[in-house]
Amino acid sequence: FTYGSSHTVDEVNQAGYTSCSSSSPISSASDGNTTITLKTAGTHYFICATPGHCQQRMKVQIPVTGSAAGSPVGSPSGSPSTPASPSAQPNGVFRISYSMSSLVLAVSSMVALALAC
Image: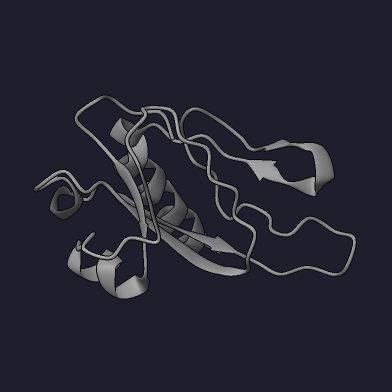
């Protein structure tokens, strides 16, 4: 995630995502350039904890699918519109970059892609 100093990236559980609550985050970052490795299958939930931002849809849920042994731990679902596509990293890890200002657009693109399938 790449974002300005007025934002944060908090990984939360589904309840925290739904209610926009970061009172018990799984992780929290505010360095402006955060890389998070998604090591487990399931949906990972991220919100901006700055008051009012999550309620204005500055949040994203990223589904990670399981795979066979020896394959990448997860693969990206959908296509974030900015900055671009995922790139393979060593050990089969995928890197997806999101700009906090484009999360709404990225989530909208993922929803549109899912609805088109």
